Amino acid sequence: MLWIVDLRRRRRTDHTTLAVASHSITTKYQLPSSFSSSTSSASLPFALLQPPAKETQSSISSELLSPRPTFAMAPRVSFLLVGVVLLLGLSAGAAPASNKEGDALYELRLRLSDPNGVLQSRDPTLVNPCTWFHVTCDHASRVFRLDLGNSNVSGSIGPEVIRLVNLQYLELYRNNLYGEIPKELGKLKNLINLDLYANKLTGRIPKSLSKLSSLRFIYVLCNY
Image (tube, rainbow, N blue to C red; front, side):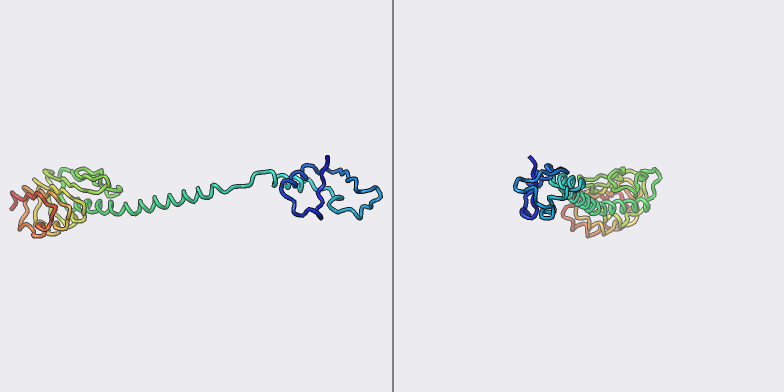
């Protein structure tokens, strides 16, 4: 049976009716019985006299029958971008602390004379100094131990050491270090052990070290 849509009478046609109509329309029409043979073509609705174009018919069918496009990927892309931005932000926030400690240790390397090459692993281009020899880091890649004991290095203890704010153990025994013990060491609030035994240090022990509540051991024997 052939279905014909009267556009004048059914302007609010639902999707289901349109879909059925679009599949039922052909280029040949069988007029309803209510139209007599004497009815002139001028009195018929224009929509009944003109066969729909093939492009129009196919576009109506595809629009009504095909699934609606979804935008589910848009939120995923947004979440992905947000995740990347957060990761970059966290990396940017963590890198300066690690590089600051690495820079301090590298400056200490440049200050000291190192005939045995024990400091050669200190590469300032690395993200952090945790892979350097004689350096120990915690789980957060923060330097908490520097052990250069019996390494035959010589020079003075510079102020760059105080930039190792998480340092707990500073072991510089049995070397050729000279000069005074820097009073700035009193700013290392986490320092537990300070071992300067058997060097060529001069002067007095700085009073600032007495303010370190965390300090448990200090060795300064066999110095000048």
